[in-house]
Image (cartoon, rainbow, N blue to C red):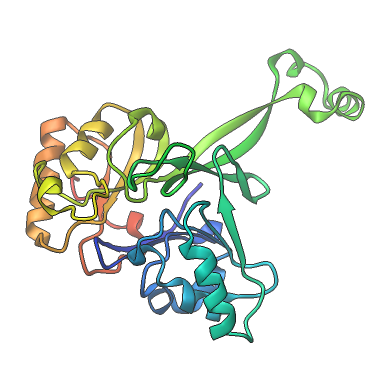
Length: 292
């Protein structure tokens, strides 16, 4: 499936990614509605990774422009009290707007957003939390297809149809899950296999140098370094990589030089794209990969 992904991602300021064909928004940082304009009305499902302000402050304007009966659905980690508070504020601030659904997420879960598309939340370690508490999530998007089991392939179409009517489709078919796009949210690099086989991986890379999180991370929230992300991608199967959430302390030249250098070091051959701090990027995958 061809996907059109646009986004903005600058650490501390705002992060959002819009997947147009799926009507799907990952995070809702400030400025998302202003950037997307009328396209923001296509957003049906918003999956917010955690309650940091740079990932959710765009919800107020998005809700005011986009709310209609049953949509958008805003999904969030269940133990983040900021979202019920934001729901209450939105109802008072925009009493004429109704319809938005605020949906807390537990894990495991599976959320269908289209007939053949599901989103699976995954707990990550960005926000320190006690066991059983869900404060920060990553998201995996899968496309589902039903494939006829080998023992039935040789049968004529009419016979297969009759068997499905009597035995049920589930008996004759096997579900095939294709990982479409996976979104890390803010997270340290933890489980490499979590992203294995993703067609598109959107991953944060807040810091370039490995020692910086210990100097800068005053909230004790954990982030990824560019080095860790590219080492991971070199050792799993990912078709395309989108890097974002870089700290604004880095210049475009510093970021681009580091990506090219580390791609050579880890022999990363897949296309690598990046969102530079302070810039909105439209149709990211339509551009030239940085390491081409």
